[in-house]
Length: 426
Ligand SMILES: *Cc1c(COP(=O)(O)O)cnc(C)c1O
Image 1 (cartoon, rainbow, N blue to C red):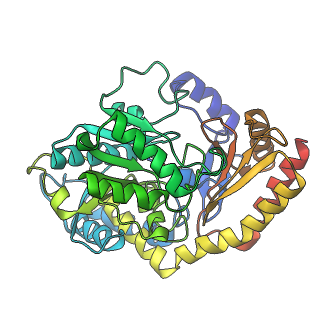
Image 2 (image 1 turned 120 degrees about the horizontal axis):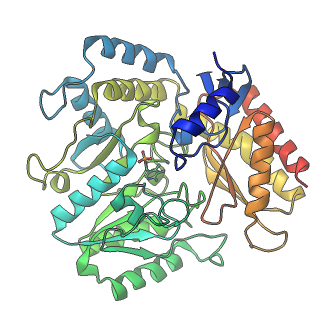
């Protein structure tokens, strides 16, 4: 087996520079909470491949289900010759997502594709063009979703022109908006929508219930319910992008559940299938079924391996009660992060929910973002064998997404490395 250094040299000569990696160690195998690189170094995993491997890497049920499926058939294309597992995934999503109404689902291959299709469906069902998105939003890297994503560098820089009829409005961001209540933040935002877009033109309001790449921003209580209520009154489709927050990550199956919000459509991907590529749009039957037959699909959407993996991953979440596991991870991590914030004035905010947690770093005593320290702490974690990610519009948020199956010993070891990294960069 070549070393990471050798592979990295080949990579530089073979792989496009625009595709980055957080670390330059190359993975050999991975389990529930650790990755081992080709040089034999073990990493504690606080990334889960960006909130994907919630059931762990190589989760036994997922591995068995995919093995069984790959030997039967790899692909027929659901639009050509359908198979039962696609239907079973749709049934499962219809039952699991918030909302007691009748639902339908359509399956795709990625999160961005799910978001694009939610927009297609909402526009078709309403006959309206405008799509309302938020400051700090992240919805993907395809042309339409780049328009919906807020941050220019690295996602949009020189990749335009972007799709039209996308309108960006303020998010509820308690650490940075002077502590507006959810109702106040929603009133400000919705006033802007009414004045600048016009309620009658809005096809969809699309929000991440807790923002992901934008900085793990948790809106103030009441913000999401106000958006959902406004959308209902305006005849617009309220879409919750639960691609990062879904599947037990925040301590419930979906993050919207905490405030009883029932989105018209929910987009999912990431944690859905234990690492196999799958995305979905699930929602009200009358909205989903507005689209003519043949209007939705894709060659690989709902691939049989991904469907087998999704059914096995969801069964694992049920069997191991991974929503409770996420809440337990929160109860271990948050006190440690709060204690860190108490003794280190560079930590301006500790936030998140379940196993989707973050610290925002600032110049002490201000809310001025400190991206340099954030990178330095993350790099110190990497040198000590803890895989962490940064995020945020200002690049000053260190986020933690451990697999939900991580054991306490590994979690505590990870926290010790993290605390050490803060000390090393002082
Ligand atoms: C990751 C992400 C996407 C895009 O998903 P891809 O599978 O990378 O296309 C969209 N929305 C949110 C909230 C995400 O976190």
